[in-house]
Amino acid sequence: ESLHGIIFESGFASIYDMMSRLFRISGSQITPEFLSEYSNDTRIRKFKKPVLVIHGTLDWVIPMQQGKLIFENIPDGIEKKLVLIEGAGHNNIFSFEDEYLTPLKEFINKNK
Image 1 (tube, helix red, strand yellow):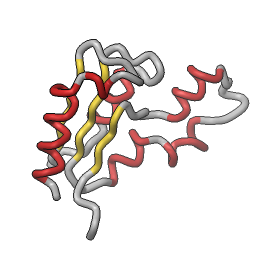
Image 2 (cartoon, one colour):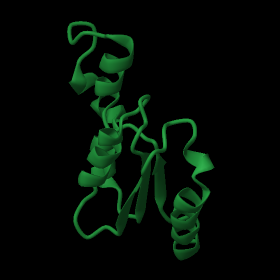
Image 3 (cartoon, helix red, strand yellow):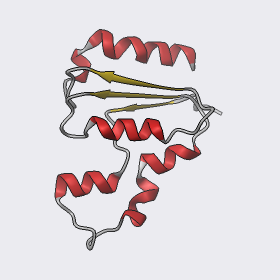
């Protein structure tokens, strides 16, 4: 197996929730069931490798709650870590170098 882990950076849990929020798509236009196979909160339940979730607390594009939902849906027994970067948004998360790069490097080095 070449995949050693997965990193969600400012990721969405539910594509349905994000489409509804960002594009104002109603339930009559597209259903949560249709999109569930593309949603990370559903797909992560099948994943068996270590997971790192990094999210900014001020992300208005994909709210921090989406990252928390991904983390909450990781099965018990899977190595996982949630890093919430205080004050970071969606597009400036990289400018929080220590808070961002330290856990990222640790995760990559541990799981290569």
